[in-house]
Amino acid sequence: MKDKLNILILEDVALDAELMEYEMRREKIDFVSLIVETEKDFTEALNDFNPDIILADHSLPTFDGLSALKITKKLSPKTPFIFVSGKIGEEFAVEVLKEGATDYVLKNNLSKLVPALQRAINETKEQSERKNVEHALKKRDEQLRLITDNMLDIVIQIDSSGSIHYLSPSVKTVLGYDPDDILGLKISELVKFVHPNDIDEVKNGFEQVFSENTSSIEYRCRNVNNEYIWLEAIGNALSTNSKNLKGAVFVIRNINDRKIAEKRLKQYHDELEKRVADRTAELETMNKELESFSYSVSHDLRAPLRRIDGFSQALLEDYGDKMDEQGLYYLNRMRIASQRMAQLIDDLLELSRLTRSNIQIEDVNLSFIAENIANELKTSNPKRNVQFIIEDNVLVKGDSRLLKILMENLLDNAWKFTSHKDESIINFGTKNDNGRLIYFIKDNGCGFNMDESEKIFKPFHRINSENEFPGSGIGLATVQRIVNKHGGDIWAQGNMENGSIFYFTLNPKGDENE
Image: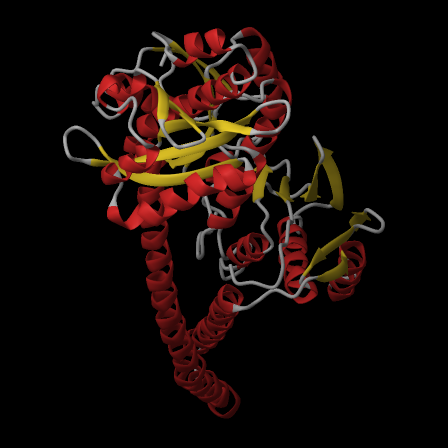
């Protein structure tokens, strides 16, 4: 590893970048870092900063790690690229490794960052050295000896009878043995250093060099401390111009760190699979309990409410003329409260069903849905002066039933919160934000304080008086669940007395649970 590394960090959260830098300093890594957030800055840094390694988050507001990886492979293909992210699914991990990523590390386990960084640097260095060795084999014997004597890998040259003619000094560094003690031995005599379980693999690899001119094997070899370490041996047959075999050369590399890392990665993968299985079982149990609860709510709570409402109505009809004004007021309040509770139960059950339901992907015309809802709203109160502006042919892929519920809630809200305006305007349309299609519903109603923008999607949270704008407080929570199930995002902007805009995106991936 060079004295000081240039490390390019693609990260939009300053604290996460600082934690990465802290972890590297804690492990005594000498480095200079450059933190970027955008595609423009990242591309410029590849050319100007000349990074030795890249650490990248996989998801940023205007850029993403996969795109950054593709740019790196085009402009600087040899630079190691490690994903450092808060959440990486198995499918995404496989995808980025196929695209050429060196490794990935979770932000909640940054203790693995430095080992991953060191492995990446070492693997890059080993790949470079391997290419140097393959090139050196084509040159004169003197040049080959000069190069191999300065290699970190072990180089062994044997003749056609299997006698060792050359052994690089690096055997002392890798295994601790003196080359002079091994020179002159038969290659078959080195089997005593091989792990018993790998002896057949080594013999087959040796025979393959002479039968197929090349071989590549991985095996365990005992070092001078009587410890087994993993080695990779690549053999190539040496022949004259007449194709008569003169022997073979083996380049042997220490891959012990890589094998340890692979073992740890497998252990992590197995542990992750177990966690997923355990979590799936927990979710199934929770869903069954939720279904049981929903059944209880639907059947056990509604019946008393119906009785309260029914007997209250009977009192009004049969004994209303015998009550004073105050008594009638109390009875009416009782009926209103029981009806509101029944509606709240219905809304909660709908929210629960949305959480558990699958989505069925199909072509959906949001403009058509919006037109129908607008007509129903205007019919419900023809005296209101409301102008609906609906963009034509807004086509999406998603669950038509859920998207209809989404549009009903958002347009009903716009209708409700513009009710105090003499002239109301409700607009549904789309806009393009750097290739991402965003849908919006805009109104000129009462608006809201932006300090409340993150709370309005929480169940039961209300920012207006119920007497002024009645409702259960479940609608926007339902909308958010639907958007989430379609792989999208939803957010809102508003100004008091100047209306509000609700934005959302959709990115459905198929028939699956949230």
